[in-house]
Image (cartoon, rainbow over the protein chains, first blue to last red):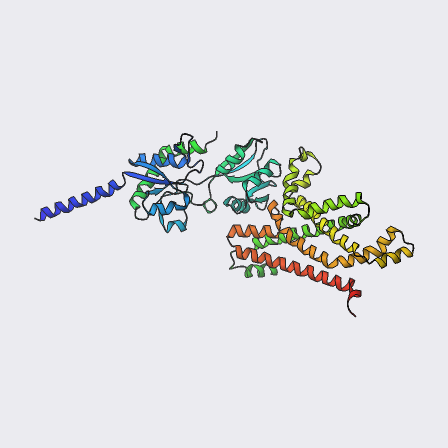
Length: 250
Length: 240
């Protein structure tokens, strides 16, 4: 009798265990498109982007299948809560306000900032330069604190105003979110611009925690599996390969 | 030295009003004062001959001046500022001319826009005052055999300036407040400093209330200056 009880408890535990695991041999991601180059559609309608590729690679690493569900940004956290999908991977910045509602994975990406200047300019020191930034952005804070005393900083309301002044030669160099700079300056047909120096994502007090995958609070185990997979992908070079695909030099 | 320690103590539990942000406000105050003072001065110098021309009987003189004041009073100052700041760069080769070192800075395009704008308003204020010269004064001047220029210098302008004073005081205050738009072309004026502090500390109330208080103080100073001038120059108009 006792034996039977043990077996049945074990059996129940096993069934429960597999039921738990079976919940997540398939993960549905909520994503808001388009937000190039993180997530967008190819002309064929297929979803692509850094988030999509990394998400698929993570699922493959964990050994589960995954699916992407498009959801408007406004309803993206409510959609997670009402089980329309199991996780959000949509360039979501980790912050304390959101942490109250959702559980974040480790940060998988910090949007890089970069210095942009005209191709023919030859800059080796920022001293005395006219630097352009968008007012109130993290780039503004960074430049103000580091170079406020040695350079003259012009603050703009929009990136477009800044590009106009760059073309007018009022600015020597600007400091921008890399994706914004790429679409407004590097892809510009008026003049040739280049990225000066490295992409910048440090220090954290300026550039933040970066993007995380959001899960429901109770899915601690699932978040842990993604964290492990993320660490593995960073080590084995898959992460770098995906990063180069979207942020590499052309 | 004593002042800095006192200031540091005063600001010690304050997250927003640090010596650094107060420095920005100070810089803003200097920029705003320079901008407003210089543009008013230049506007005044321009407005006197323009007002004389505007009240001239010769249409080929008065009409172009009317067109100028009509355009600058008929369009928003913000648009004029945008046109002058962003517009000049569409002249090919402007970067190679001697003007560029000035136009490259945001200060001079803003100064030009503000000067042209205030000159247009001041011209119309003076023209009204010139028009309102009592006919008797002009007839008396003619009877003395004064030439047109002498009459303008001795009779018409002195009394017109006095009559224009209250209206001109208003224009000065309007100009101070209009200068708040200078920050859209990256100038770090008072409003620019407030916007910077707001964006940096997400503290709209503190940042803007503080700057509003500074504008109030400046307005008070202007009001009292004009009240003093009116007392001195319009004493003869007071009831006995």
